[in-house]
Image 1: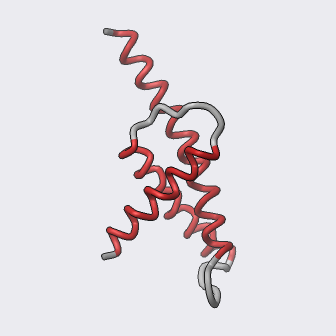
Image 2: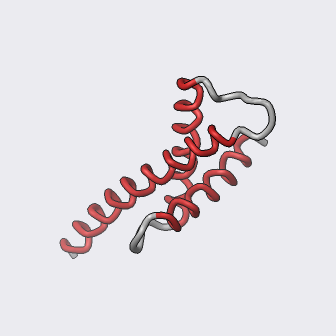
Image 3: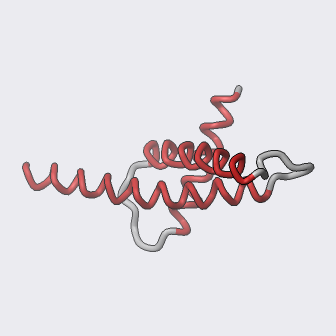
Length: 92
C-alpha cells in the first residue's frame, strides 16, 4: 500500500508543480509522476533534517518542503528532458 500512496502523492505533486511553473512543460505525465515522487522523497528528507518530519496533526511544513522540492525537480527534469528530446529530434 505504501507504493500506491507514493505514486498518488507523486502524481499530485507533479501536477501541482507543473501548474506552478510558468510556460509549457514537455515531459510526459509518467515522467512528471516520477519527478513528483522524487520531490516527495527529497522533501521528506529535508523535513527530517530540519526536525519537522513528525508533528501532531497535519504536517503542513513537511508538505511544503515536498512541494518546493517537487517544483525544483520538475523544472530541472523538464529542462533535461527537453534538451535530450531536442537533440534526438535534430538527428532525425
